[in-house]
Length: 262
Image 1 (cartoon, rainbow, N blue to C red):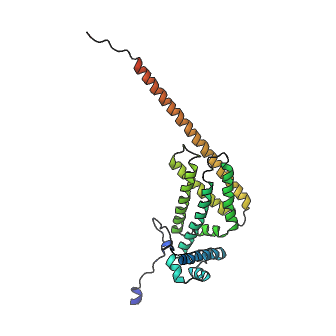
Image 2: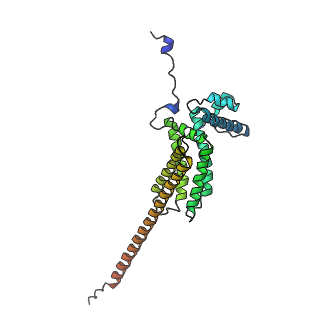
């Protein structure tokens, strides 16, 4: 028979990151540092996390080992991060910020006639990051581990896609905004998926990156052409409306006036 103490035992709380939720939570640090000393500890924890993740993978990744490598008390780690899932989400956000800053340099080059060259340069930059920094793939893979990490990753991708959508506006001025938003989300998802594919053990990185460029260029060229088609249709529609209005006005002026009765 179960003892009274066991029957009164408080059920163990499931980590929110592992729960199957209708709307998974976004995983963010408990707090962000505001002072230089705290910022150094925060950065040291993230640097140690990235190093450990690359060495042992996410399954063997522990907060205790991160704290030991960063030479920071485990209590300090938990002041910032509730668990390892929050840590990896912060690493993903950190990676995204770097990519957004690089993309900002590319902004303004669209719709230049040389936008394809700038696109190639940007893809080469991202591909170089993934080829030289194995932690990026490990972070991306870890983000697929739970509903909440996947939901957080989706939020990060949407934020990135918003920036991409704004940059696509000059290239596709007559594309409806909802479709442009979807196009940007597709591009972001394809880029990250292909970069992950490019650094797999049995894959030639350069060949995969070349295929990614072909996909992106073809997709954007079609989008640009579709936008021009929409612009031409709109112009013809406006001209047709102006022609009908002119005909209507001319017919109205040509109508004979009825003679007045004496």
